[in-house]
Image (cartoon, rainbow, N blue to C red; front, side, top):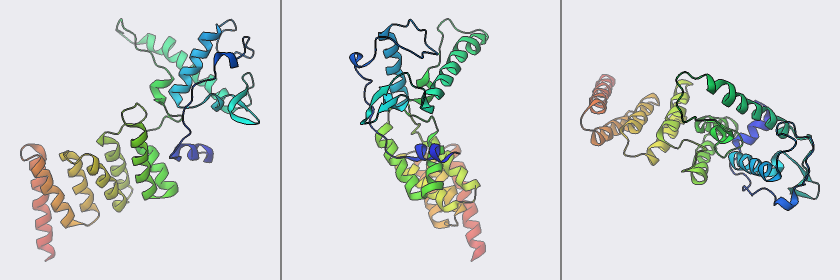
Length: 256
């Protein structure tokens, strides 16, 4: 992955999103329009730009060239100097193709058509990436503590919005991935973080118990499995946790 993209993904804080410039700041005549029709009304074009800004959580100068003396103000709307603007055209063509070509071929498509937009994937962030993938990139670059802190920062900022999935599955996915890669202690830390936010979930606590086993922390594993029994005294979680406890006890007896 290119360094610039990695840096953009792992950045914990981003600049606040501002509204696009007022209509008076935008020219009445447009040049170098390649996706939108040349005769598009000014108000319609501005509204499209607003939607792009909100969908990606960026300012206008993310795609447009800024003024040399004012980085937050657009200096040249027509310029194609910024790669972000050239990429945006490709993405717009992709969205158009999905809606006009691919979705129209769905068999037995309902009368109420669901189309995709920039917000469908981006959800208010510049780079559409799953929470666990973003955390793994932070961990690879800055270490486990930074990754765990990134979760807290992102949750504080984006919880309740479409940017990231803050349900228990995201951290479980990351923890399982770390376990498979042989990073048992890091996996434990991730599962402990998950338990902090979902203490009443037997699945979350059960996965933490398994992580303790992988990290050779038998006493912690036993305590976690017993916590599962308290949360779910009947059913699959109870029977599976009971079996795991018995296996640990037999293993510990064998060691003694």
